Length: 329
Image 1 (cartoon, rainbow, N blue to C red):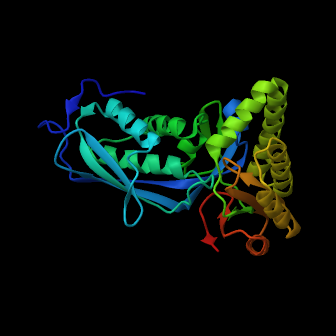
Image 2: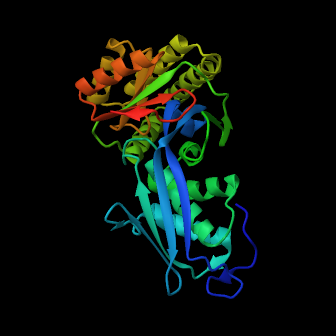
Image 3: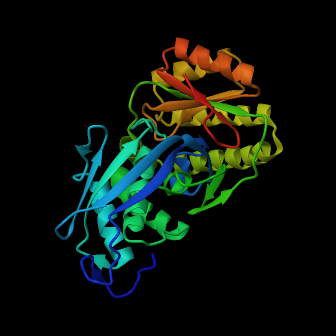
């Protein structure tokens, strides 16, 4: 990460004296590749700009204390290890010591659902702090700062959430870098909340222990997911939605066999497929959270969303393949 050189205190005359700063980010959904991406496989994600996070940073009297609060009314989140890491990295990046500010975060992304809430909150917060100092946070710096927080929050973080929560188009993530894909047309993704919080850190640790015991299982898993994702990217950019859906379902089977899914998620996947979805799978960290299903037209998407609600999903969102949440149920 690049720094600004010699540090200066926030109360020095040369430091910016804005009263407030603001930041914004959004959710994301992984279409294929979660968990395997940690071990070098590619992953494909779409932004969910309808699920937003905003943050406001307000300068306060005093020195060297940045607090974080979330919700309405705000509740403190300053004890979060991820936010503590974010503050330390932000001080190094900005070169400003002694900043005293309150950061209030308004998060519309359901937490613990694999939709990128922790990365989006970190991105919105650090963007607000940079804005408070009158500084431009470029894409490279934003990624590095958010990723520092994510590594502490989730243990082993691939970086896909840190990128996708600021992306404006579908994103292919490979080997630590992201590439936005051409806007596809025709496909609609239905994201469904199972109503049960996921456990990303636990799922990452579960897989780590499993792969330590059986390295061949890791190699097989990563190889199969890589093949599926590479093929799915070609399907996605060419609008071959039937083929893309089949690869989603195949990816779900691999995640289920790896112990990342749950009976509730599996039942919702089956409900989506029975309602005519072209494919369906768990999405995100696993052990709960959300699933994502694919439909090829708005009518089918509504049928799938209704079937998922009837099967126990607590809410659904329909997302065009190019990104952009259309509506929620």
